[in-house]
Figure 1: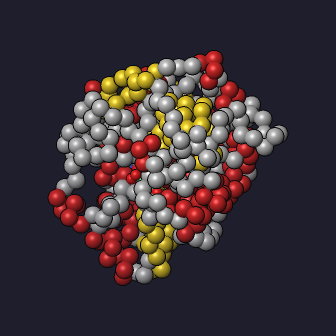
Figure 2 (figure 1 turned 135 degrees about the horizontal axis):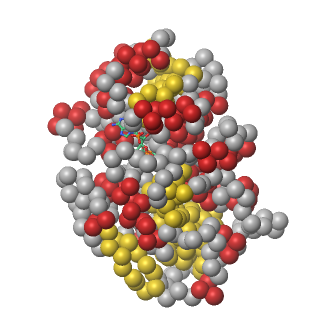
Figure 3 (figure 1 turned 180 degrees about the horizontal axis):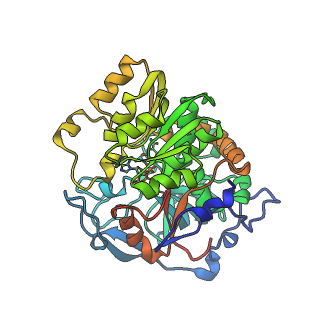
Length: 427
Ligand SMILES: NC(=O)c1ccc[n+]([C@@H]2O[C@H](COP(=O)([O-])OP(=O)(O)OC[C@H]3O[C@@H](n4cnc5c(N)ncnc54)[C@H](OP(=O)(O)O)[C@@H]3O)[C@@H](O)[C@H]2O)c1
């Protein structure tokens, strides 16, 4: 496998090819790429006066149906930066699995506002921020808007600088000059090696969650028998490849026979199982005659119960998400609601974990922000030796943002891995 193998990832309709490439950015001076070289338009030449923004037209209801009617395009005046802020042009953003939930009444995306929580890559056009300089390529929490202000100071929540409560910031700041876990300047070495969409996938929350999770469940040994749920999804695709790179036996999962086959054909897993198969229990048993040592779980619910039943004593269980709950059309059943923990862990799973002395890891990747450079370096080694490839899908065009977001919840997905929205024509 090479990093260019992303061409083998299925893409139809809205979705376009994405993979590793070389930027025209110059790093000879050690200065990050000027924004012109990343496909942006020079600020002076462009002088936009308005910001285009997709906002929430109405809340997603209890039926969980998300349609194009939930989005509305508005134009606003270009914001003026204050001391401590930077004005950025958003180039591309990741769409996270929980987006639809945030659009419900009580969610953080309010009617008339955009979703400000998307992990985005952006170019700094003007700056009065202490860390972000004009021309820097940075990540920040981005909205579905062409331009916005941001800050390297997380305490400025009014400009959407980051997620969650601040902690461990001293260590993070030492590395990237920000006190934010999501807003930072990419190192020139990263910009030189990887295209923005790959940076946002492999070195964004998907790759980082997978890296920290496998590390904390490690050391992974060739003798380990590992199940990775959500292998067709963004974090699972990364985690499965990292486990495989350690020489372990890895079984992946997808929704339907075609997606199950994809994890073998495209990600090189030993076995791919359809989590919707009515004979799943028997097929799982056949795939793991000696039981399961490690489970990487971003889904929770019935699949996780089936896997947990086969786990060996002293196994390792990494729980990072609850995709089963997030993607189901109807609301979770009452019994499930009563017992499920945040990531879809049931009472049965907890009982098995306790009885079999299984080591459990469950956290948000942001708690490891201080290890980001280590993660980037280790993941780069895997990328550059062909053991890891990006699995991402780019929906191009600012106008296509609603279609792209809706596609994430539109029955059986047409794509694999991370969904990304590219706002500009070329990056
Ligand atoms: N802890 C953290 O730091 C962290 C970081 C990132 C994400 N997360 C969370 O982790 C979860 C997964 O994120 P992601 O970005 O990988 O999502 P994603 O890209 O949307 O992938 C979801 C995966 O779950 C599978 N899936 C959907 N419904 C399922 C079900 N009922 N049973 C079994 N598998 C099912 C999908 O398979 P098919 O598409 O083939 O049906 C797909 O492989 C989400 O809950 C997200 O919020 C947590």
